[in-house]
Length: 572
Image 1 (cartoon, rainbow, N blue to C red):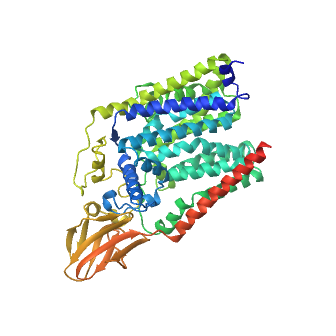
Image 2: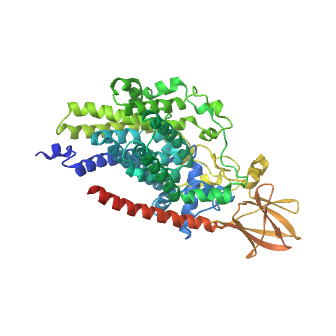
Image 3: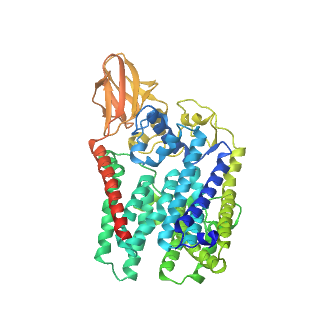
């Protein structure tokens, strides 16, 4: 039998077929990544400086022998901000580890390629588990992974970028629990945990669609069986155990502490008009806040070939997600509600892409399989990969062209209050960004009292301390999760240091543990004796946090053992 014909026979050679498609997905991943990496530069835009600073802190701490990073001692202007404690960072560790073997710019693009291929792989196998069709799964993975909005997220919005990786698996898990094989509840538990480790807000966004699907289940099936309810509760319970290290810090250090998380409210300027939604996919790739033209065609034509109730539900969810991205949705009515946390309506494009790509993959693969057989399928698969690569390069060309014309980021003083400009970073000037104020997120997870005035915020950035009615500009001495200052006092007095005070902050004076209080800037205030003093501010995580890590690791191991046994039993 012809080998090429056999490659597309799922029953006779599924592994070779999977390898073929994964190889093509890897080809597109490498091609798009090398296209960007060949510029040897990065455009520091949007959330870039926030995440780059977090990676830098993790890398330097790892370099000094400390695995855990709780507060920003080396970055964020040495303010001790706890953006690591409350904003998950586990998926940034591979980027930090790559810094040991690659230059800063190449380390980022290597991490970018890893995340992209992980997204493609998870998308492929999730769709295959849902549809049982290899070609449809390959098309789904291509279109979803290299969607314009996801490519935009990969430039700087890394929380969402990481979360999008796991959305196909998450909704596969929801489907299995509500309609499919309820014994596969573990898919929902695992994927929910992975989304939470990537981006907490994406958990909230995903939960909205999960609730809608649950309601649809109740209506279409006239209820839900007790077994499915048990599977749903089991997946939710296991998920909580898997993500305990993300949950616990909010109970031990955030709730009741008067901390600021993010500016509430919907940014209406980032809700699209109907013209943008409908026409942007067919125009030049100037703005990546849109669907691909393939998905827009799906919106316009899918109703003609949809036959099953299941696909109508998916179509409806896709249209609803599109509606949520627009100004037509009454976002102003969400003022004062938890929905304000969404902030940017364009975030729903990820969900619109997910649902509409399912329909596009199912429809297009059905048409192709009717008209293309034998060895032509191999040529078709390669052609699809090349087409999607070219389409992605077209979307990325705006970013690449920007790198050619934007100026390199200049140096600035270490205590600068100037926001990081949208400039180009290369290996030689990569570290310049850390002396600027982080554009978005510089004051996240600080006490609200720290942010009541520009003067207070700037005093933190400029390392200003207050002693005996005088303002001092101090130079920090840095270690992992630890900031020290040399302070000379002419008499016994309190010094207000430019380091944020949290519930589990620790303070020592001249090597001895010392009591402190939170000042009106939300900073550490400690009493000093007359003379030269060395004040060290650190962070010691609650024992409950370390216990949560142990429980989480044991839960992952127990789930892995269960899956091995389940797979063996399922195979029988």
